[in-house]
Image 1 (cartoon, rainbow, N blue to C red):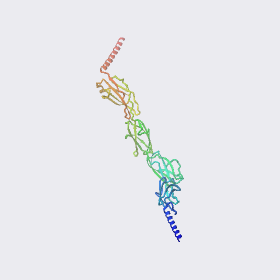
Image 2: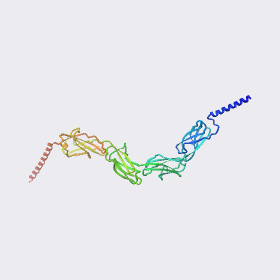
Image 3: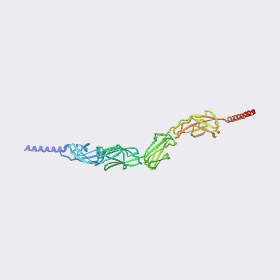
Image 4: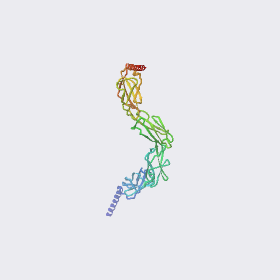
Length: 421
């Protein structure tokens, strides 16, 4: 009886320990489990993140996640047999796909998600003539796709397109020459249509280039071509708000004209193109390098002059064109300016008379000249030169001398005629 009692005690103890070990050891799970999966979204796109929540799996076990038999994530369950894993949806065709999870005991849970087709444009905004890429995912594999631009067939590169084995493709196109606006880019495959909006902007080409860092000269000719303006309309080209000319556009809103930068100061100026619906503003920066100082050639320094006074200097060249400023003063420091002439077009100036000089008591006069280019950049003054005036006595002596000479000539001619008789 004692042996039987001891056996029963040992048997009960063994059962208790076994039960305790069964509940205390998380890695032991004798019953087959049927995992359950829940998704952050059931309609998905390739390249997006999908989060999977699992429950009723082996506790504290490794778990693997599969998308159509492709392993996409690895994790572990907690003490309740639950897990949360995320992965990026791999390239795959349109339709239903299986997502499943396996724990260390090969307990499995699965569910279905729907992959939809999708297109992405490399740019949401582009100029006419610019290249835009179209990337597509989630299409039916190995099946042709076609492209449209506001219901008009669109030429793409490569020309013939099929989705690859994963349902993806990549092509490019040039934005057509149409009036600037918002257009619908469509990709069609059978009855399925995917579309994205593209904002197209004015295309403008200006040669030579303008803008900050592109210093230009007054008188520079600008060749301007535009696309996407109002069809069969006019584009008003303005410089600092003043209209220079009106360009006429064709049926596709294209034009080409030439303008000349007018005389203006070295600074930033605005070039405006306005067709009544589109207004484009660009900056023109003029060069700010002053011209060289002129070199005086005549009269000789210290020479006494009588009217007309003739002043001359070596001409200065500048791409913007130049004008000269001439000053005459009664002192070498030019504090007493007697005469200032601006806007001289040539490298010579003839002074026939001047009251300020005539009335001046100065014995000598000082003069100088400087060049100013078409952008208003003023160069340095030339070296000053000095001249005097022929005195009244000198002028009277000259008159008397000339008169005496004329009398002598008349007397000589009379004497010659008389002696011939």
